[in-house]
Image (cartoon, rainbow, N blue to C red; front, side, top):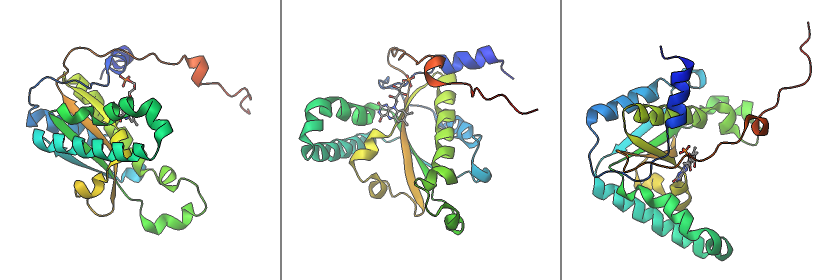
Amino acid sequence: MINYDQLLELLQTRRSIRRFEDRAVSREDLHRLLEAACWAPSNHNRQPWKFIVIEDRARIQELAERVRHGMESKLKSLPEVAAVHAAGLIQYGTFFAAAPVLIVAMHKRPISAAAPLWDGLRQPELVSGEPLSVAMAMQNILLAAHALGLGACVMTAPLLAANLTDELQVPPGCGITGLIAVGYPAGSAQTPRRKTLAHIAEFDPHPSQP
Ligand SMILES: Cc1cc2nc3c(=O)[nH]c(=O)nc-3n(C[C@H](O)[C@H](O)[C@H](O)COP(=O)(O)O)c2cc1C
């Protein structure tokens, strides 16, 4: 078992990697990433995740192009957003074009028998827990990649753009939670600053009842 300091070091040194060496990732390492994903917690241990692993560079580039076109056409109808954000947003959504591997992470839809429980809730999928479970599995993939000397980046911006569900032949009953670009890091990435604990948390001042 690793201790807290080792864990914190792993957490603090993981970065979102967006530039990759032109080097394939072994199947063995890809299996390790998926194995790490499987050990995430999930709602009722439902393990509501599915992954498509794309290793074909041409296919990855083609998907990035589709995302670019989709984002460009969406931004055409939003000129004020486009004027400020277009270049950055498109780069944010398409940098994966040069990634050696793209993992599509999907969540199964909630079990419909439980639907009456969510009646009237604004975000039933958040309560049922499927996308959150998959997000946890995605974090496991990021950390496992880092531990293996790989780099990775989670992305949801590409989902803004294109109808990837059809393009990727997502199984019925599943939705795309996010994409993960994976490869060997080319150079180092800057460490974005973190908010202080005082900014993000407070301890409830009410004393606990004896
Ligand atoms: C839910 C989620 C969606 C993200 N989507 C994108 C994305 O579409 N494109 C991208 O380049 N990075 C994306 N990121 C990566 C964040 O930009 C990154 O985690 C953040 O800037 C902090 O940097 P770090 O991961 O190196 O600590 C996403 C991260 C999360 C958690």
